[in-house]
Image (cartoon, rainbow, N blue to C red; front, top):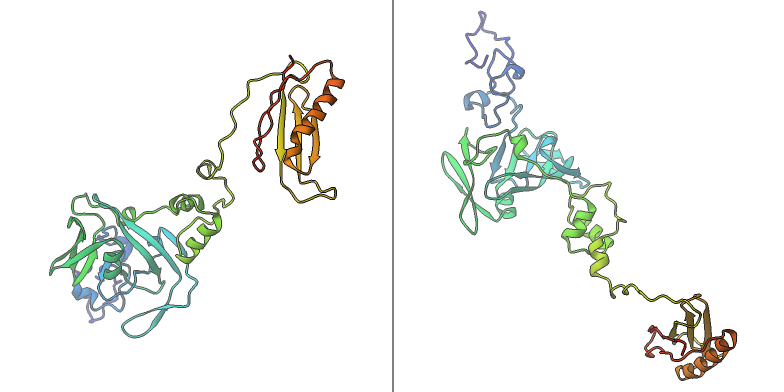
Length: 338
């Protein structure tokens, strides 16, 4: 196995099996030496006689492709169903259906190389990387030579990838030239972000905005994400008022401490009232409520309240603080016995 195919049997008809990977006769792909070699490109003289490309897991840079195309769904580590009606057209004009769309990442020592919006076409025989999308999505430029190609960072000019040219095809290497070679399936990996992760990445907008951005830009998102979860950062960052400090006061008798509050204006009631003033005893939490037409009546209502409670309890109020008069404001009134 793995040799040049051996001698042709007598009679001129070679009925031996042909390998779908290297296209040599005498063995099948399950016994081929190159089965686990991700960088293998078949010899041109054998590949040219084949009716199809067969099994080929390499990515090839294509300067004429408008999109990344693959015939292997496993290449898309982040993927979603394609809902459009577009097709991929070959040089002959034939159209092929698009089943899924997704993303992948190539790991390099300098930074990751992203392959975005890869089209999964079940009938595709080659995994093609659009040269234009590769350089555009990664802010890089590409240099093509007769025996290899370089992918360099556009700003720093650092070498990101170097791939060989085999059989007149530029193959995307499974690892960078500075790393030990490893299988391509291990080099391409990504995690599908959750709805909460997108909420955080986009600056903590409201859920409808996050949904619109994900839908409009066809971003990958876990379908089982909890869209109703409570974000701690939003609760703290969007709060309009800090919580009140914990009170340490304790009352042991009625009228020792009283809280007062003036609220309004509200819709005019049947009796023409727009405000109310409340008095709450700290000891019993009993509440007295007085409806008033104007805030100027607060002092009068306090004297009425004072006369009432001093008749009910054998204690007297010495002082009180009322609200500042701002709308819906709150103040604490301290009423202590003499």
